[in-house]
Length: 118
Image 1 (cartoon, one colour):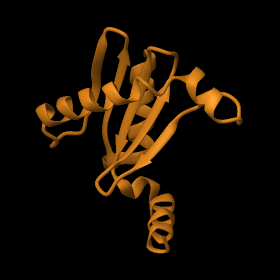
Image 2 (cartoon, one colour):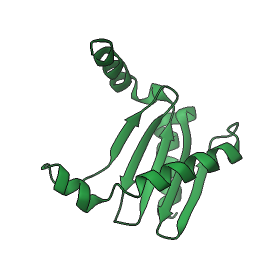
Image 3 (cartoon, helix red, strand yellow):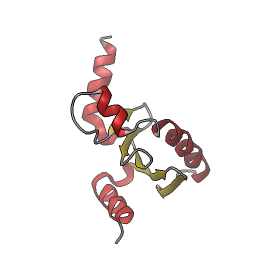
């Protein structure tokens, strides 16, 4: 089993139907590795392309210079309709995982409670 299959199997075991999609990118482009049945592939492709364009700028060296906490492991973005996890592997390679918000219920609830107080 290769790494991509192992990652997808792990994510499906841990998150079940909450896994929306998984993609990998490098300097030359991106590849959608998994799409949950029922999601429109064309919609996901356009979403991934926009996300990858944005996330490429999130390189480890730049983030490490900006935050004094050691190496960047990844980022988590919480939206109403999805949670996006980004794992920058090198300056030009990374993995993007999209999940249903319920996967991070404690985090998203906590964030919404903070927002209510802002």
